[in-house]
Amino acid sequence: MLTLVLLLGGGAATGCGGRATTHHKPGTSHEEASGSAGTLLTTDDGAGHRLREVPAEGAPKVRLTARPDSEDGWNLQLALEGFDFTPDSTGGAALRGAGHAHLELDGRKLARLYGPWFHLPAAQVPEGAHTLTVRLYADDHTAWAVSGKPIEATIPLAGGGQAAGHSHDATPPTSTPAPTPTTTPGQGPGQAPGQTHGQAERTVTITVRDGKVSPAPARTELKRGERLALRVTSDRADTLHVHGYDKELALPAGQEATLVLTVDRTGLFEVETHASGLVLTQLLVR
Image (cartoon, rainbow, N blue to C red; front, top):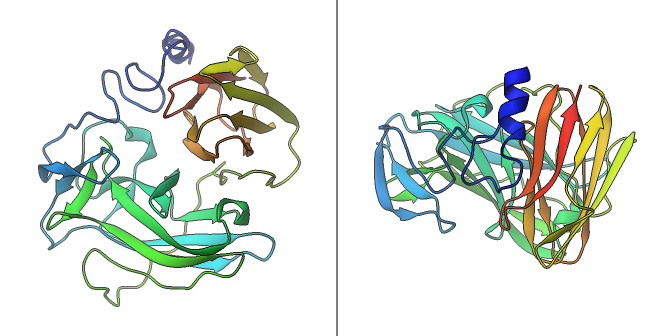
């Protein structure tokens, strides 16, 4: 544990693209592809992640279902075939049938997923008709593909209303039963502006303006099991990421967004923005 803390602490001044963290393996970044699984294509998913093509036979499949939550928003379920979530090896070489998923609303990334369930707050979905997409990625951040198209599922979603229980596979849907839903200890959805789940014991408020973080990045010391609320306002649209816990939150430009999580792992974990690569704070959990 001491070695882990020293490794993480040594790279606190830079973004997530070029150093060892609890998110990327040493020497890797979102833009780099590694591993011999499938065929690496020159085309990408539209967000800079290259496609990694595999044969249709035996390729991973995903179906997406959204059910209105009794209190707020929707509960999303991913039904997967031939695919396992591997949060512990994110940033490593691509292994067929393994990795994570991205959740997008109208082409805008909302979160990275490491499990089959996700709660989508209503505040993250503006009024009107939208398209919700979930896409499968390898550990090296390349997008799994079949016949030159990403393996993904889409459903229509109406802001302020209910979601349709529609699904789509990279290949025609089959009658294979959906896997039994599982949950990861400590896994909780990112919260949108004004949304919280449960009472937070600690609150950290951060502002990002003109590429500067206020207050200046420092360590936030916490006890294992504490519930933390991260309240962030950014002057530009970005994505908040908590390394080690693999929690993400969309940051709308000029609006406060809140991520509530239970810190159930000990160690030193960085909180960053993806687009601007800024370190907002470090969570020291004892």
